[in-house]
Length: 171
Image (cartoon, rainbow, N blue to C red; front, side, top):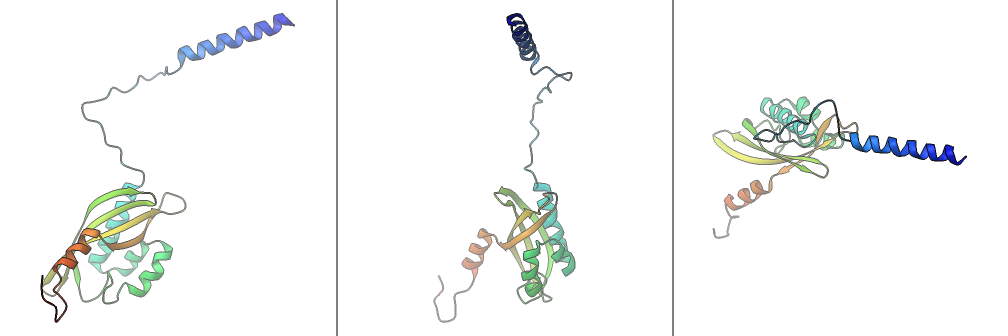
């Protein structure tokens, strides 16, 4: 009995030694790094940018259905009641001649995508920075806009350039 156990232990030891010696060996050699590393984009960043890009295209075209399609289901309910209102993204009294994504960053819930949108009302043209929070849908393959707000820099700019209320001194 001892001989069988000793042979088994010796065999296991040889197998383990063989595995340790060949660990990390593969048929393909490891890639040699080049002079410039390839940046790795966070998962979902391209999808988040595409969803916002499609929404901005919808704003420019005044295509309410396309804009709604980019939103998460819970956000669609709010959108339905405000999209074409006086301050909605698809209000009939203004146009969006230009819109550009300026930044994307990963956040715990997905990605925040910042865009600068040029809004024109008659001859008045105003750039506005919007911040979109884009999250993955249940399957993780699809993404949707969960929230849209004024970007913090846009809110500060709007407040500092707004005229003072009537009856208050400027500055």
